[in-house]
Image 1 (tube, rainbow, N blue to C red):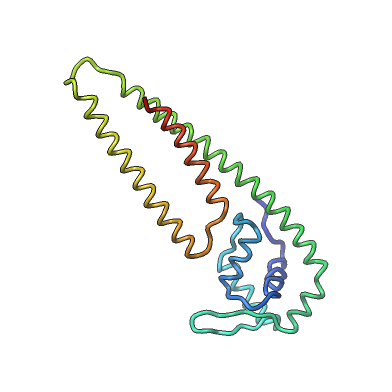
Image 2: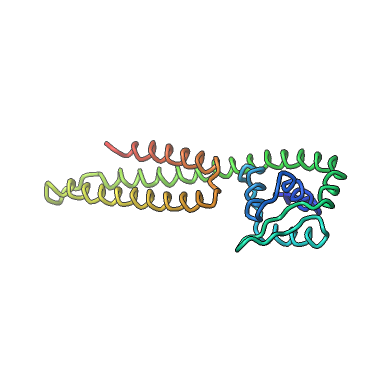
Length: 202
């Protein structure tokens, strides 16, 4: 996938994001992620060095507040932004196209993952059917006991999945990074899993 920003474009876009008011570095990272619909999220190692360079150039001013630093446009920063409005307009159009391309790639990746998941579920279902074929030897209650054991194993798997995904979601929510894509993916995966598993139950 092509780079999101060409040379100098992220620098310009950071200035545009600061036009609405001072922001922490993390707020800028989140704002960038929101503009891309969660399909791109720059790392701190990408954003903070550029903010430092903008500060050196006198385009932004950093104010240290306890453990966080706030960045704001200076008069020179506003002048730079105003002088490059046309370039910023083209950049916004390029970002819109990039978001469309990345969203299409994400959808294709999800579809590929779903195909793999369906294949895995189908294989598991077939194995369950094979295991369910009655064998001549064994006590009469043996199938029921085995079924009960499998039920408990399945319930434990469901509980583990629920606990782990809920913990992951809460951590992401604390960072403000739960995207609509996460919800759509979860819904698709769970609906497919439910259909596949129900197909194995008699």
